[in-house]
Length: 413
Image (tube, rainbow, N blue to C red; front, top):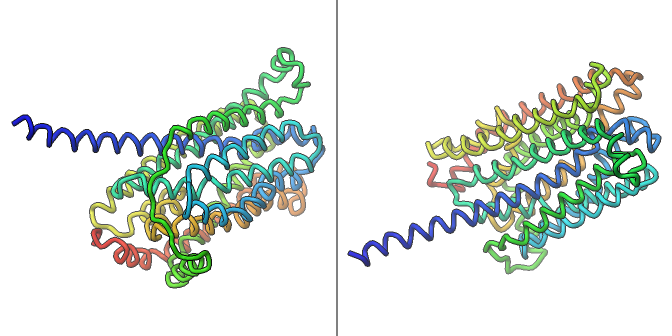
């Protein structure tokens, strides 16, 4: 009887231990995600202080918001993913966290727009290492029936980071007089303090990452050429699915980057609010809407898929756009090339959505409407274009996505 009890208890303890390991790892990766997004988003609540300090226009500022980060993120995303697919992904993430944290500290010392642009380029370099490696780790850590939930939990890091950047940045702006008195070295430019705090947040995330072990994943024995060839061959074979999913994500990301970059400034210029009062509104909206949406979407996707709907991810994505890439691409990719194909998608997001989203709003404001107060109309036109393209792409690939999911995962049939 005792042996029978042990036979029952030991597997249960093993399952609990494995669950605790993947849950902790996903939580730490979500903290890294939050640190990355906070470092990226902090510029969006500091538009006027930085513009006044460095003497730049809206269009020039938008290049620091988008293009600067996109340059290295685009160039190094695929090489970083190849390392992640073939080597230690935890180390890849760690290098990224340390790099963008150091870049944030460097940004605090910038004395010109070109220096801040260079620092933001290094932020993009660091963040290029995070997403493909982290998502590949999660795919190997989480049980298959909890994958979307795990990805949703990782996704919650984005809204949390946005909220911390907006609310924290707004608090610093509101209290800059007191901060300058308590810390004379700030010299009245509180945006530099915000950059330093982002660097400290990243350092803490890097320390937590040391507690996570690298999960096992399929090793790739073939040469680099054959490995790249296998990736290209798989994408070419299923190009219609990838075109639909990728196109939808690009369009949605275009809207997200445009809105997150300029909505606080729109509220200030159009509605007469201050950055200090805008910060908690936009920060809480991102935290509640984004984090809750990402978490609930992950759970919903798992449950819908378990009921036999092979297009579960796209059903959920029609309502909640944030998971369309993370859930759908992860669902249809073979493990051996998952990180590299995701890196291709990140490259496209950086080159197109991140670069053009903030820039389109600023360019329309500066050169089409020709007045700062028209930033709201610029946002309206930008988001209308992106949302229409996203809906069309999702509807176009839904049937093909279902068919590929049936081939890749017969258990869902």
